[in-house]
Image (tube, rainbow, N blue to C red; front, side, top):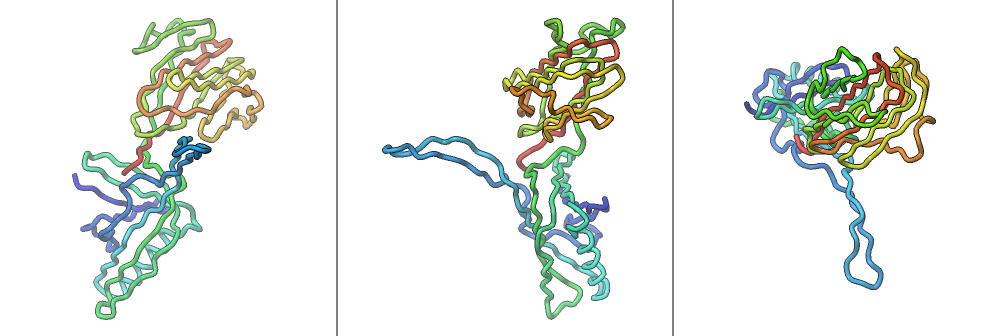
Length: 287
């Protein structure tokens, strides 16, 4: 399968930019989409010595440049296509999605806002051909999977549930709901979203692989649900009650590292109706 490139508008309309497509608007040579995002680093110089100490590295937002060729059967159609493209990428309507088809048949996508470009170069000898450059900015510099990974953690309080329904499930401790291995198939860390239905009086989510710990104490009756969004640093019930004050001072809103993560889930005062679900979307550095 050859690589493809689609531009999805804020309204969900897809424009195929793959060379050879019938859209009339295609990507030209020199698309800057595949590499790594910019890297920000901090290194402190060592006083009175040569060299320094590297402190940390982070990935910054990235710009994506897409050369565009509009090739129409007439000048009238070309102008119509230019109007279509401008409306398609207008950032006033929200961000676009750049969707890349890979050789293995999978797709990765990036959310990006149109930043500048569409200063069309009009060749004087061909009124049906325009060439330009579209520049997008991606605040989240990673390419994401098409669909999230969702895992339901089995409730061993329910006597009707099969014992050890999947490997590697380990039970230990009075409040331990389960110890499971969650596999982040992406190339970078990703923040999961946990959904817990009561009853419970305390939730502890411990990433044994990274050492990060989340701990919150609150009363959640049976049938009510709380969402813990690690990326947004949000804890709230489906009724809209903000429980961020219930989070302990030692807690971290943690990410799943790339690869396997051993997670211990502790649910105090769990009942047969208690359920724990987690969801995340794998991300990569490149398309």
